[in-house]
Amino acid sequence: MIQMLKDVNEINITLKATQTRLQKEMRDKNMIIHHLKTASSRQSTSISEDRFSKSIKLLDSSLFEDSTQNVDNWLSWMQNKLKINKNHFSIKELKIAYIESWVNETAIKHIATQMRNTITNSFLEAEEILLIINKMYDDLNHYHMTQQQYLKLYQNKIFFHEFWMKFQRFNAELEYNNKTLLDDLQHKISSDLQRATLNEQITNLNEFVDICMQVNVRLIELNVRLIVKVSVISAACSVASTSSAQLTSSISAWKKLRRSNLNSIQKELFKKELCFKCKKSEHRTYDCLKTTQVHEIAANSKNDLLSSK
Image (cartoon, rainbow, N blue to C red; front, side, top):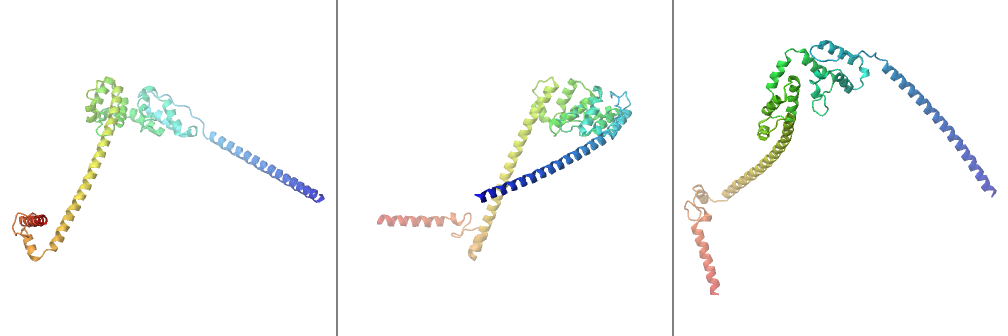
């Protein structure tokens, strides 16, 4: 009993020592974590201070409206603004949105079609918008050149949605009315679309575009089915031609083997295309009347023997 009490006391002493050691390790660990957090916060604070103290925000440019303004001055100011205050625009979408906010509705129609994210050729960089504005208002002959390009625009073999995006860009620059655009669109679409929409009585441009989109999808599906059928037929024809070639080679090999087994007399008869049995022309051995008569006589003799029994 006394020995058991001594063992219990020793266990208690060991547990207390272990508990004290663990508490000391936890205090040290918490102190290290506190020091790391303090150092990290100081570093982030210094970085953020450096970031926001890099450049002084320039004044905003004036609102760009039309060709009555000096486009060179406006573009130069806008480029310097984006360059010097680039730390104020952390992502490219902010630059694009900033330029859009300083373009009036009269001028924004030239870039509106490519501002939507749903189209395939939307603006990726802010510099692309500035190039479009410079091209539209700095070149005095641009309107005439755009008209010439519009006259040459036809759908041909491209998909309708790609053609429609090009058509819209010209529409933004030329400012034709909807009736003129509808008439032009009906003549510029592909011949397949013209035949498919021939009986449609449409007076609204957007309705006609929706119909063309739907018809174009159906035409694409039909073309895909046609391509699949053609590929299947061509594959079947190639297999048939291969089988025919194999059959022809097999027949020629069989003929060569047969000729090699003929004696000299049979070879002469074969060259002259004569029957091996009767030595006459215009038939082969398997069609020879002499062979047929022999078989008939043998069959009749066999029948006579069976009947006599």
